[in-house]
Length: 258
Image (cartoon, rainbow, N blue to C red; front, side):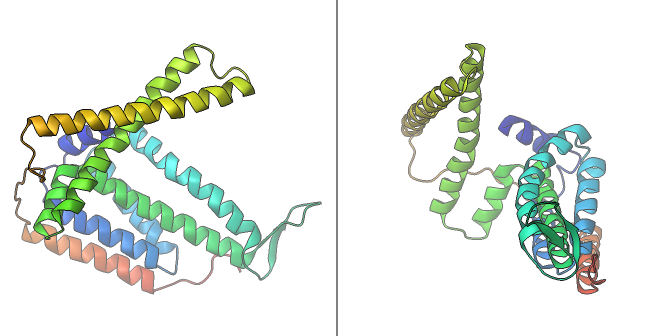
């Protein structure tokens, strides 16, 4: 997954756009999503960010859809709880034989949360799929973020995907050996996977330390930097876009479910 994300970030059609501008658009869109009192603005952000990723950056739609399934599936589980146990007002749906009911306030809150999650994740994927992480860390360095924080973030980001890759390899090996055929075997295999994953991660960390020492590591990781100017048209378009989203978030249309 790490290699795939970085490949798209390096080869997309928005690659030559200023990383600072892309980061500003993505983070501003996330803030507008989470602060909007109405689902219209987050949904508009989701639509525009998805259009930018699919049309401007030309990321494959199937891959982008698979990425969105992960956060949306988690959000749906949380929203199901909000939908049935939160809010008051008129009852829209009542489960027969169960003390569960969907009220208008609960439905409106669930829709707002889903829109915020969807808009925020589309904005985050816009950054991840169009901007290499090396450029993001370079921007943090230019903003005078402490070097220790940047180094830890770089190592953490890299090791997350090493951990996922190692876990996938161990899991596939266990499945080929029928390690998840029955419940008891599944529990044992899961425990073995966790133990082996811990040891492999520890070994990978030690190997990384040895490699850094062999390359005369002096306590500071180097970050390749490249400055790309922001065009006047791009800056004006960005401000118009964010201003439109802000105006939409202010002009609430009232609750969807009354």
